Image: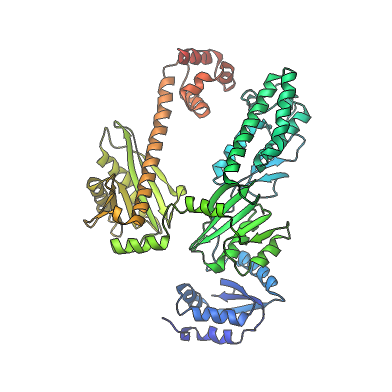
Length: 576
């Protein structure tokens, strides 16, 4: 434990600090700020920092690296709150927690054009239109955009051209063809209105109007248009069913859930949960950093909803509400709906409490639970399409952005051990280049798979790497120091290692299946005269499966640039 003696110069300065609101700045040089904070009473807050050096390593480092301390007095605590955040944004001090994610969540925008379309935006306000979202994960936004085009047929071209012939998307049913006057402005705007209701979760308000539309088109024998409206009703009714299952008491909110060393974000739109994510930071989240992180999230361009819910009553929440309400009226509360809490428990609570897990891991294995664990598996089909997977567990959660997959290149036939050695060698080589390589890897299998890992580890000289393997069914961990641990006796560890093993298995199988589907399609196309490498790629990217190509009209294939005779050959071969 340290006393204040090593920090005497700073301690003397703190003794002269004013008992007024303001911002304080720890400096390691003339312009190099390493920590910035704010306080109602500068002297009391700085004394608190000094006392914390006795027990808190972070506080010790701040004082050890600081050559000077200065402060700026403000007229109010709120003014200090605003100034603190502006200075943090300007100087980016190393010991203030910073967001590493959350600034790029995509939103969908229905534009304010004469003929509106749907676009993806990652910054609120950059496109003139009505915003919906954000969507987590990002692929959800792309899928929703495609669904909007397919169901509500908003135009895909931008800007809107004027022409006599419609484009390929019209024939695919992705656009209603306003460019060639295939739809009236009134009908088109109604479709845009329906798309907005769909995205906003307000399906009930519109569904009766759609039923009236069906009756109108049916009476006029406009069956194609009636079919389009029927598809819209199906999409909206599916949305209603999902919405009623959750039945949240709040229509629009961002829920920030501070859980130990994590800050979770739950997005609620249209009275339903549309996404959940952990806001990644460069350091562990603590209570003092939660409100600045929330403010930082919105200052990076994310949509500000009517309601913001935080699961604890942090001191600066009133200041945050006042600051955000400059842009639009915002209400901040600490009353998290029970439905959201249960949702978080189901989706984040799949792993046990991290502190419990750390304690159990240390007691059983004798060393600290690593921050990062990588899991490996091999998948093959009778020696063909052999692939390997690498999945990543970080601090309580699977990090899918860090997953890696490998085509096995040097092994012929069925040889799981040789395939595992190749995959591990290619991955372990990267550890030598990484600033913080994993301290532990888990291999799917028994003692034989463990041995392959140890061979590669020794060959590369990775002395600090620990290797475990996990046998299926028995759920026994084999360790690199010769132990066999029955995980059924340690439930927290059972959940941890089976989660990593099962995810590695799933990821390997999915990659194997993808390669088989791709090669299977291409091998079929090899038998068709006129279909070379380039045309195979076009057909694969467009249709993915043989069944989809067989179902595609001949004129569709021609519009893809395939000659008419070749398109006829494709259809004849696949039909036969």
